[in-house]
Image (cartoon, rainbow, N blue to C red; front, top):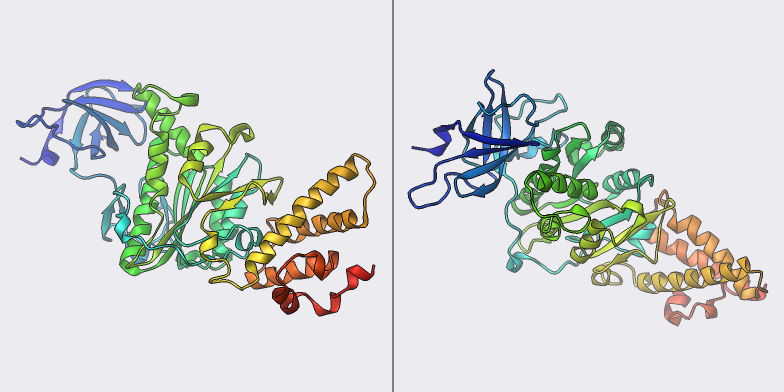
Length: 453
């Protein structure tokens, strides 16, 4: 008889939001259910709720109850449905908003008849991956010029509470040249959720967006399902329809904190700061979904990871840094050019972008580094040379025109603005750039202007 037709009644223990229930093993000695299988918990008064298998120890199965165990007694029953959590997938989910249980929460048309897919599948076979060589334009100069986002890249935005990282993430979703944007909200307060949704709607990109949102008031276990739901849908769009898909998720520290709470309820031995011992593996399983498919589209993952106490050695950002291909540091409302990194930018800079891209990037960062040294000399009341004054002017212009996250200009305009900024502060021979590029791109009306001063 199918296990999904059987109702199990022997509840052994209820701890936190988990239930332990005894299930007979098969004749082969294997458990009758599988890891991640769903179950329907029915209380004595007929109320039903979903739960997920999170641990199996011989004939004892631990279930994580989505809506919590309040009102559930040891007289409750469990019926297993024979498959893991599923979510709807079709072209009709574009422009829709779902909760952490995969149910639509936007008062749109019913999607119960749409095809459903399992979540939490394996990562892509490396043989199916192509070498990333395409740029995703965001119109954010500190990304496009200095830390280029590449198709199939996985990158976090490291920040702290109070910074405008959610507004910045929504801008990237609006301005990025991706075919589809899939957003995953983890433990969002209502204001943040509403801001994301209205931003996408007002910008006219909601029709190419899918949102999976777990709000702070929603069940904790649903927070663990949101990334897997979003990534399952993303893979389908990329593989079957050849779409370039951008995944945005915030905040992965909230996701890790949810895993910690579940681990405590399972009495698992805690690791650093109380997080579960396989934190690295759990994060890597999600980030490694990023892929440029050789025979399809691409999946690019951009997340927010907050650093408690601005501590980059905290377990969540530290483990994330080992997995991802660079990061962006957002603090004081600007992207820090020295803490930020893109390990794949060399695949596109000067190849799929303008020939002067690499020279502009390196030259401006060099001058900005020197401007910080000049600012330190000024703060310590040392005498400044004319060159130091030019560096200070450049540093001020660079922070205003490029580092501010509210600046929005296309890549080519940003490169031209870089030449203009350099010309306002330095003579051509001070740039130490290739002469052919200087002759071609250095503004003619500024040639020799700084030297004459």
